[in-house]
Length: 222
Ligand code: MN3
Image (cartoon, rainbow, N blue to C red; front, side, top):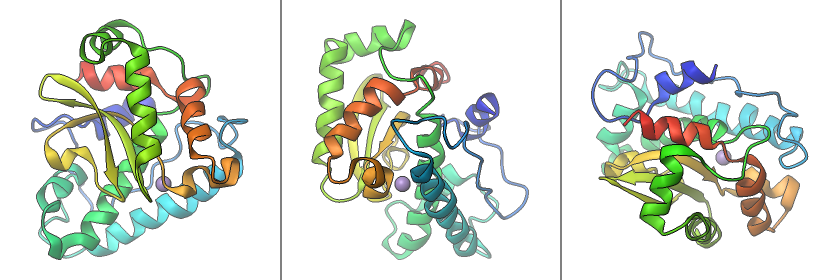
């Protein structure tokens, strides 16, 4: 599942990486782990609602909205890039981006995750942020200060790693950055487990959930 996902959803910008969907519809992927796999940090009920209701809803709405448009045979990343700045396509964009963002988020976590990255990614974090702790501080601040709903990201911007945050459905693909991993900070991602304590969820994400192998693989794919 993980290997297939990386191929299908790789955020590389050059052509031919994403498979062109032969059918019109974008399918809801299964979670890459069991619903209980992230406990006690993210509960089964959070993952059930988040994946089966929220993510499924975005995928269904995207499929409805893309039907019969110029975009219905394009990879979802191409759709996102093409319409990101077109206000008349906001509905299609929001659902396309949220369908993509959530799949990317599921893979940005794993059971037994968290801790420190290794290898090339670790070296690049040290080079671009100064040290891991400075990266972590920037990531926590991005997540905690995203007002309302949105996402915190580790991205490659040109040759440089950056932490960024986006509002609602927006994602870094639209601005030419390459996402390496993401954290959902919409309330539905954490409210059942952490209520209003978003900083606790963010701390837990970095300590116990983040999938550094996924981020490293995305960097290696660039
Ligand atoms: Mn969400």
